[in-house]
Image 1 (cartoon, rainbow, N blue to C red):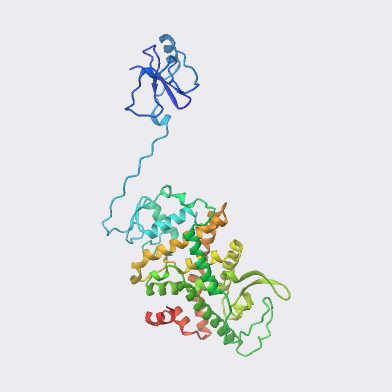
Image 2: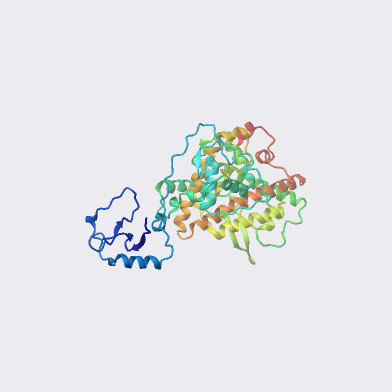
Length: 455
């Protein structure tokens, strides 16, 4: 069979000329379909379908002219369908049905289906989506060979994300249409964040009347303190600080009990979440009472408002027995939140919930059955934060969300790296703690005793 010459025409038409005949060229439709048949009555003398409008005229050539044209083309390639039209994307078939005992190929938890091309659980599915959509960047602190098992996966998010890729998760399968900016907040999310903000204000507003004297100067940046000469002043200041921490703990418990959806969890799960996140939530509690340049008698200095109504700076934390590696990261977190969101109570209250409801920790066996439920509650508030930031920062919501969620990692570092050292320091100082704080931080009493004090 003689070689065919193909000319591409406007409006996605293709004219195919067969050199064996000097008749009208044969029309080949622009949508490839092997079942299509062409009727010669559809063409006019120039070989173009009537009704297409103006197109360049094709002049009929004699067989001799066509032979010359063929000799001028050296081995012309035969056009393939994908050279003319983009390849058709194969439709995604139905996912195989699960038997109910399948395991997640990433963390070995109970699988809920095929997510982004991989058999996985809800936790790993949502983790992968958040990492891709929000552009989060993780780093491994060890040898990039950490375990991703459900018991160890919170230890290294970098290794967990790499395991997702290794097992075949594809970021192209993520539906990003959910992230389109909306002019107004959906009513369910609007009502949810209003409830959360109200709970935050109830927990953080107002002052406490401590039973112990602070022995601290009210001037934030004062280099010397009028109480420095008092005998045993260090211990007295530490006792005052611990009393303030006790009041703060009670307020955080009140806030946590008012979180919508929290009572869907068992009391054991709520106690475990609270205990594991206490140090981080105590730092987050002061996010809306931070001032990076608090005016004093002589100058300005970063300060936070304590529950007795007084503003205090870093030096006051040091005088109360706090270590530098504990105080400096706290002020860095407060300053970071302030630079991003000032004192936005919507953002701070949602961040506090994400601190409290964080299942990526070393989880007891008896609570693992509630892991999916905890993940669902966490995803609900993550989505609420995302939608709120899309409304507040329509042109840079993705970047703001990534920076905001990075604060959770900073808080986790405080809990993991500084808390144990700080508790050891307080024990060396023989500081006395209220029974509630002692039970929460020492973990050496029964769950029934803690439940009586918390919930």
